[in-house]
Image 1 (cartoon, rainbow, N blue to C red):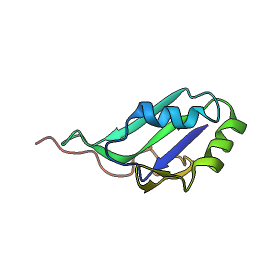
Image 2: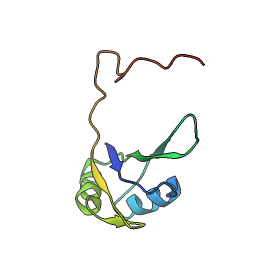
Image 3: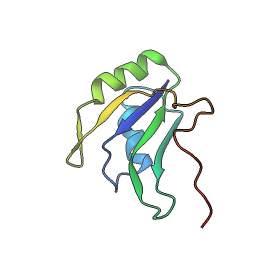
Image 4: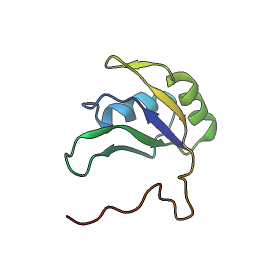
Length: 94
């Protein structure tokens, strides 16, 4: 199951998120999205857990939990909008 994790502190690492979710089960992948221009965290990411009951337990246990002074938003990731999976037009080269 792919899980959305929002309101993540900009200094939180993927390893920290992984450790948090591993309390509930196996974690396949953690990805914190980074801003292309600044290289800084965008404050959200995704966790992939192969076992659906463990993933649901993680969602139930971590949604609303505080990490580094921020209240996490944790829920099942929704598919991207749009026919081709993109929400907006591609960026133009500078």
